[in-house]
Image (tube, rainbow, N blue to C red; front, side, top):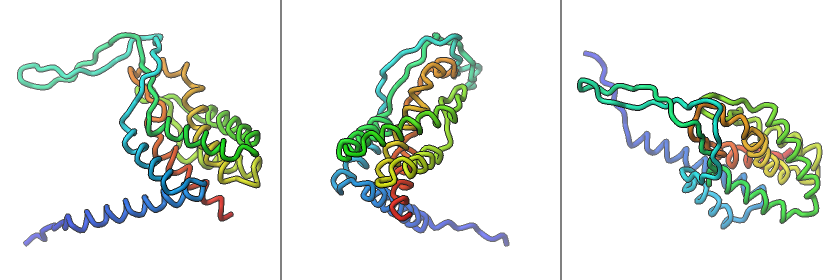
Amino acid sequence: MRPVLYIDYRMLIFIAFLILLFLGWVFYFSLSIVGFTPLEILIISAVSLLGAGVNIPVLTLKTDQPIMTVRNIKWMGFDVQVPFYGAQKVTVAVNLGGAVVPAIASVYLSVMHISILPQIIMAVVITSLLMHIIARPVRGVGIMTPFFLPPVLAALTSLILIPSSPVIGAYISGTMGALIGADLLNLKKIKNLNASFVSIGGAGIFDGVFVTGLVAALLAYL
């Protein structure tokens, strides 16, 4: 008799709950070390999650070549995918959860630490330039960078430029460096990605808020 594979879905749900609980604790811990109050962390978390699927169109670019899309058509009762070359336009949007929220949080922290604002700006500039060099356009997808690079580069830059407050500098330069260096400085490349829609910060919740905040928090224990 063959053994029967039995999956206890209750155990899977429990494990998933523990993972989410742990990630929530890490998220709260990292942002609290950066300097946010519990209420501010709650607001950031809620708006980031709810705004993950909210993309605000801000710009329409004309591409240098037609954009290929795939359409499903019925043929003899079967679904067939047919390539279709459409209009030479790409819509650029800003993601609420992955771009707007981290940017507002960074501006808020900068105002709260106005005494080190010149060092923060310098850290943002350096991180942005490094991210611009590293970022690579991927056709049909967008501008891609390894998710761990913005927080690591920001942490190293902040340790050098802002040794008195590296945590604040790491969070701000990591967040803004990724948005400015990888996305904004590569707007000219977006129109040649063969994509009809590109979202700035669309995948930025994890790397822009979670990982950056965690790396910044770890600096507090160095």
